[in-house]
Length: 148
Length: 148
DNA sequence: CTAAAAGTCTATAGATTTAGTAGTCTTTAG
DNA sequence: CTAAAGACTACTAAATCTATAGACTTTTAG
Image 1 (cartoon, helix red, strand yellow):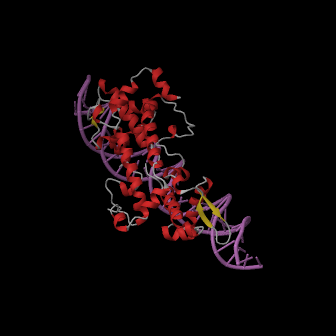
Image 2: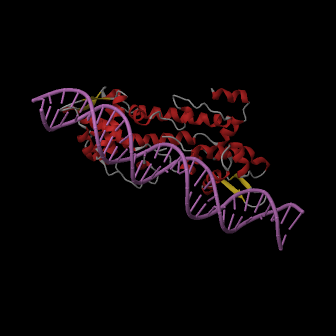
Image 3: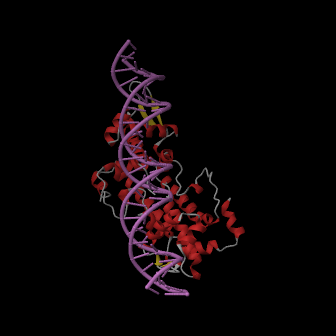
């Protein structure tokens, strides 16, 4: 039940764009340096975010990435789903539920998984990029409080 | 963000024990047949459940497994944690949080992960084995409603 | 027009985790 | 003693994750 690096790195990356796009498109390379992620791996994550309409690319000289929506219209859930697919603890409660359950027993536990799926999505959709931007602009002393 | 087969099979297995222990210890082999899981793999799952005090084994002739607590005192969360370890979307919000975050940026997203971790555990702990037993004893027509 | 900066696409490889198998040993009722 | 049943340890095949690499396209400054 862990997020992979895709989701974690990708969220940091799009937050980095939100924080730095005021001075023009943000390059892969600059994000990679600030976030300590390889350029090449980061490229794949940004491709997923772009194909899901969360960011857009500006090609050519002085290109880079900028958000494709307002920060308050992008939720953490949107980002994670773009990078990791549907957020669901088991296949049979995915949005695109191909594998309809063949076992009766599963149905008993299905209620639990469905409840969990719903709640996970609600929590992740309750945070927007704007929330995180605001949080990251708080004075450092305050931020340190979360860091033990 | 998917459960592995350990969690899914293991929950089915302990539910199977709850449903069948009234006629004495339930053998690995009988669970394996009903649940269509290999005896050998199932053995490992039951070992985890036993070491976490959720079931107990009776060795020797006519042995098998029975619950080590009342069904209402075993939550789905207990079962999943026994089989898959702490339920947390990222390492840094695990109960045994070894990897304290070294990056400031993580702290911004940490609040989200912590909220998610808490909620996931609450949902899974809100269902007990007794709930599932009761659910699985409802008439089939009713159960079918959840299937599709 | 051309060079350099920047993104795009597809394939591949190494590492890790998952899922399952196998062999050998121990316990216990009858 | 013996057969049924669990216990322990090691191993392996497959899948997934985490990148890395190479060749290509777009854009603009000069």
